[in-house]
Image 1 (cartoon, rainbow, N blue to C red):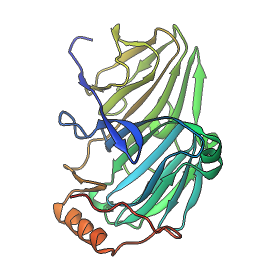
Image 2 (image 1 turned 180 degrees about the vertical axis):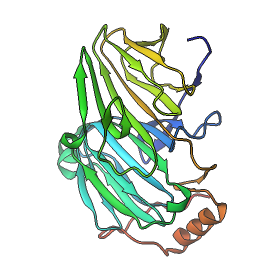
Image 3 (image 1 turned 135 degrees about the vertical axis):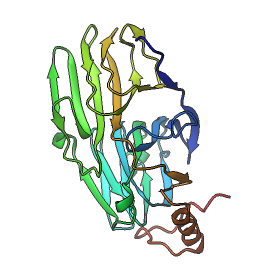
Image 4 (image 1 turned 90 degrees about the horizontal axis):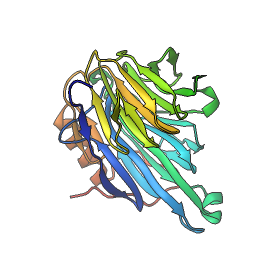
Length: 288
């Protein structure tokens, strides 16, 4: 690589008892394509009787995407959705003008104990869709397209790239690819989207003969091509897409192009003027 790439070292956060590495947003990079939030969930091992329990909380102005590698999540929302999300699936919730949801370890895994590993990402909606009707969609792992050749397996989680297109209903040009390489395999990284970033989940790899740091996000320059080489079996993801149609403000779980939208959402949640998840009484109160 001729020029140094922007490397973002995630900060560790505790989300209702689940440890995450948060790469976006960062002071050095607010977004990559439509992605404004990137959490690598390192919940680790839950003993019997324990698990994730993220109580009822709100969102506006974004789509949330949950993708697991180990464990499972029960998703419930104010639209009436009640969906078990398994490894490889995509849980896709578009908040629009406002939605609330709950994410928790299902009862069967809570009783037996389980291991959690996965990603949750937020994608900002285009300005004209920020106030759209909320919706929820679930995609089974078998619905996601993938290719496999010469020790490289690519699964397109959302958007398009590498001659694959996901059925997930993204609202703007998007790339979210899961990349698994066997030892010695190589993959050409084309300049298919103007904004792109790589994140190494497991293993060791090189990007144009330079080590790809584990659990750091490398933001790639536009129009540049690269070669990803696996030193051993490795697992990475690539995100990206078209630049946002203007800056976004983020406050707690709210994303919007206009601060007034966020202030109104804060007021409504604090007042209790918000759609509720059926059967749920507990909720996360507005911070600050």
